[in-house]
Length: 382
Image 1 (cartoon, rainbow, N blue to C red):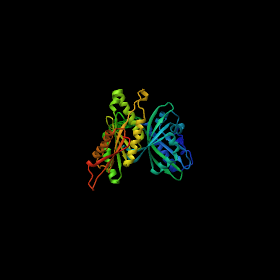
Image 2 (spheres, helix red, strand yellow):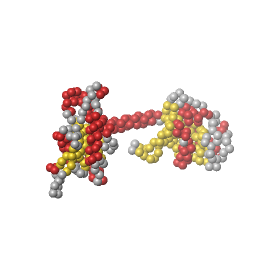
Image 3 (cartoon, rainbow, N blue to C red):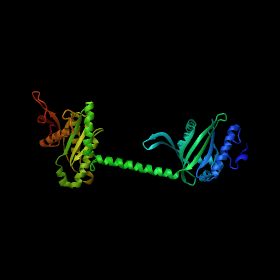
Image 4 (cartoon, one colour):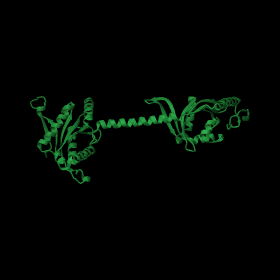
C-alpha cells in the first residue's frame, strides 16, 4: 500500500514505502488511521508511532501528533531530531519503591544519548515504556511530557513499533518539584533543629542533653564489648578574673576560642561537651586512663600556651584544671563517672590548679572499694 493511499500528506515514515511484510504494513496503516482520527479530535493528548530497526540505531516516527509538532515548533520531517534535541531530562519510574513512593531514575540529556542502547533493550524486555521528559524548545519554552507506550515486535522485518501517547504534565511536575523542594527544605530544617538541640549555642560543642544520652549508650556498648572509655572533667582556672578584666562578652568569646582549642585536640569518636559556665566534659571512647591523662595534659599545655582574643587586641591568657575517670575501672554508671571526674578536677583546684588528676583506688587487707578510699594521682607540677 502506498503512503498516499492512507494519510498521506504528512507521512514521513519508512515502513509503508519500504520492503517490509504485509503484516507490518497493514498494522502500521491501521494504527496511523486510528491515531490520526484520535489526534483530529483535539483531545489534549498526543498519540505517536515510533519505529526502530535492529541492528541499526536509527529511530523514526511513523506517525506523530500535530499537537506535538506545534509544541516543538518544527516541521514533520524534522520532528525526530527536534524532539531529541529538546529533551533536557528523562525520568523513569520503576516498581521498586522508596519511602517517598515509586523510585525515580533521572537521566540528563547527555546520559539519555549515551544510554540509547540500554534504554531500547529495557523496553524490549518489558514490552512497554513509561517515562516523563522535560523539553526545552528553541524559543526556551519549557514543559514536561509524560510518555506511555506499548511495544510490538516484527522479527521477520527486524522492526519494533512503539505505540504511544504523550500527555503534557507540566503543572503536575512543577507541583512535584515544588513539593520536593519543600520536603528538602523541611529535612534541612529538621536536621538543623536536631543539630541545634544537641549543640551548645556559644561553643558549638555538644550540650549536656547529648552528653547524658550518649553516655548511657556508650556505657551499654562498652559493657557488652568489655572495653574502657574515659571522661575528662575540665574547669577554667580563675575565670572570673577574665570576666572582670574584659567583660562578659569577651569572656564568652574566650570560651569560644578555648572550645576551638579543645575541638582541634580531639579525634573522632572523642567529643567535647560544654557542661555549663566555664566547665567542659570530654568523652573518650576506647581510651584507658593513662591515655586520657596524656590527652588532658596535652590540651592543658595547648590552652596555657595559647593567647586568646589576639584579633581583638586583648591577649587573654588562661589555664584549666582537669580530672579523669575511666569506665569500668572507676565506676559503671553515668552519674558516678561524672562525679568522680569532677572530684579529681577539684583535687587539682585544691592543690594549686593548672594540672591533671586521675582517679585511683586504694584498699587494704582485701577491703572492698568505696568512695572513701578514692585517691588522686596528680601530676607533679601541681
